[in-house]
Image 1 (tube, rainbow, N blue to C red):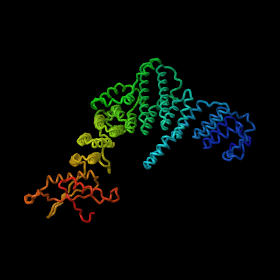
Image 2 (image 1 turned 45 degrees about the vertical axis):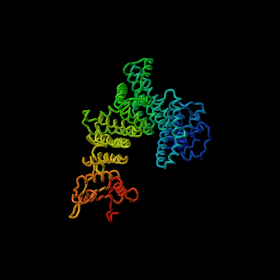
Image 3 (image 1 turned 90 degrees about the horizontal axis):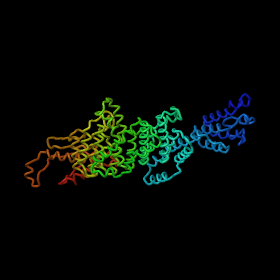
Length: 617
């Protein structure tokens, strides 16, 4: 309004620079859609109307500046500012319209303008990918048939907005002669979010090439084509974040193939930087040295017989360790540039989601030095809280690996992985990993190995803090969860005797809250077993063990036994409290009572009859 009054009064004479400020102000105030209209009027592609929407909304009468067009020369700068101002507000449609106007005038957009457009496309692709991921999470809550149908349509739709935006950004980058490293990084993340893994890898390799070139020129003492404070140097410092971001996307999507691509590229970058910093090589020598670089991740993926050709897990682990030693120095060249513990964890998560157990097995060895760095017995750092925090960042790795071993029925590797994890970290593994190993061992009928593994885990003293340390108020103890779960898995697979042995061991060690109550009066004595809060498997073992122990320690009426030809008689009654099913998931229908009655009739000889206490039904 003020500008319009100044022009009308003649106190303000607009020039070309003023138009730049006007377009910037329009975009800043959320009116970027009028930038195209303004440029069309200024180049006289459109006749201004005082009553049109532009005038009503902005109160700027362009007629006041049109009588002297010689003062306003619309050129490359105005179009570029118009495009970048629109992109700054994520108004890409107006920006593209201004770009078309620019081309019709015979003007070519500058590289900076194209980079801004590519960045805008990338930002939109990231936003749309987040919305599409949210849509997929909603699909997961639907019924199976609807979910499968909608997910298939979603995955087969090559016209998803995020994919289209990311592909447009890639095309613009490919048209640039020297794209900025920050642009390449942003487009790489956008492509990964949209599922364009090949394109994302190309962008990542472009960033790596710039980083190597910078290091080569630095080692040679040449002047860099850009100062160390420019986006190139910043992109080099942000490489660890870019690597982590791409691997996180692979882990969330369960794409181990793309994860291995990125890991290979990261290892090659670290190796190249080490070669450059060690000796300044000629171009031919440098290219020849790259052909000799072999990454372990790609080796594991291409040699499927590596794990199966060995006669025991120990031999295979030794083979992997030898290969790891040949690659370790290359990965430790620059702090943060090579693969780190959390990066290997993300690779393992991606491999676990798609069942690639060989990659999980090989990746565990890469985690060893990072786990040993959190072992209080191996280092002199006294800050237990810091060590626990660092350990928890890696703890999910074992869970992902063991879950993958369970999926592929590799029970021996599951046990070996947990055993090595304990040796390396000196800490108890997360309960999810141990329970997964219990499940697969019980399913394979190896009840004794469940007991052995449980004993091995509990031999490790609990650490302060973390998810395996002290129990907070209201939480179930780590030991109790392991015992109850192990008993449940053994029971579900018909290994009743092994389940009973674990039950006795847990009660004896004080990890299971169970106690037999004996009540007696002048007439008779009774034994009470309270099963409140127990699941079916735990109650099954509790009743069996209680009966066995009572029979072994009970007093027998020898006189009655001598008179009774059918054998000895047990003179103690047992009261089994099962509850009324108020907390049952089956609408107040009791679960334990019918199961206990069935067990007493079918699993004991002679069958044991039961009588319900009146008033307790």
